[in-house]
Image 1: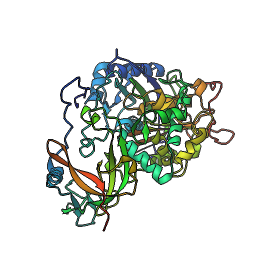
Image 2: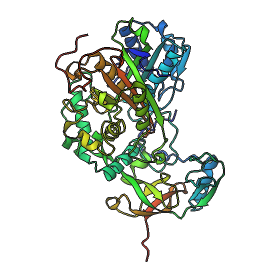
Image 3: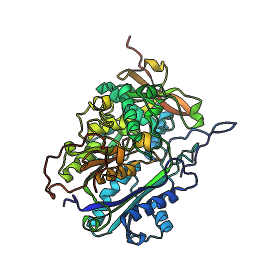
Length: 402
Length: 152
């Protein structure tokens, strides 16, 4: 049973972002949910499936539903950290197609920045790693980066280019937290946190939340926003702590990406952009390899010379990513929000030209869990279009006509 | 929810978190206190792995037995930790955490430990190491990695 194109995203919204000490994580989730619903022209009473997880709430969906006055028939709190929200797209598709719910709300919120000085987590202790002083999760990613440098010749400069590219995109995004110019030298001169990762190789710590509303493709076409179709999805988990990762240069994104592409009938060459959870610069390098945009080991070269920056061969993290736009603990939902906006043609100065298909990819733990979703402004094979499917190149100057 | 760790204004820092010593992992840790690195071997597929489990993670067989590792290996990757949010570790940075392949464990089954006894700048992936033991806190021992003694 192939679920390609059976459901569509009809509403996306962020809460206030950046520093929001006046909001609790629940406030943020509710704020984003109400905005996403309003955008779609739907009401709280339309929601009958709820998907959320949180570092703050053991029963995230139950809290959210009490707050909003929703009584769902279906809920899911799959707890795979940052990739959960991308995985929820697939879970929502399955639930909707099974008739277990009709309209799904995915929501997230965190006040990680305003809780500065306190590391908030529901995570159990990583028993073999944290007592000896592994800095969770940065050191896990640092170990992966160090191995990638050894095996593939990736350099600190190439890692830094990922941060610079993210900042270049952020400078085109009015909502991005960091928009001042950034150079490779700036990244390399920032203090080392856990070698080889410098501070500017690491994502931001901000407050923020987001929400995504999903329904059947049929119902989506009767609503006011331009539907963005879920064309393929996949998820995979291979380990918990970095000690359990068999090969530090290959992530489970290989599996999640393969499943997503297969379901969609599309391949990496068809993607006009990729929104990849960039908790650290090494993530982007590994994901462009594992999601098939370049051969294994070539990620450093792929991102060099502005390869993923505005004007580059593959637009990546066009909102500025976790590195420059926002990062409130778990970033996954923001990959979806930006992918949807690109496919609707709403991105203004950072718009990818003629965007038809793109990736939203989430990561959790220490590369532990991955989820990939192929999204599209159309369902391949179902619309007749003149011209070939060439990937978009760089940001558009003018918004696409609606 | 784990308690937030706040920087202390004075007095002793909060203690380091201790490993979970319940169950099969507890057998591993009890042996570490005797300065023995015990691993497990699957009698059905010969997979050799660490950390104490009821079954083999490769084939699922419950016919697994403990054996003592010869504690020789090589560095697979490492990181020098320069910053930490927990006060007990802030006084120790910079220190090195490494993943080591051990000669008598299956590929991909690794030990994670601090590297001691050498300058962090001299550490290389592929470097030969052996497992020793050191106090984490309150006389509780954990495995560490030190440069391997060269053969005479």
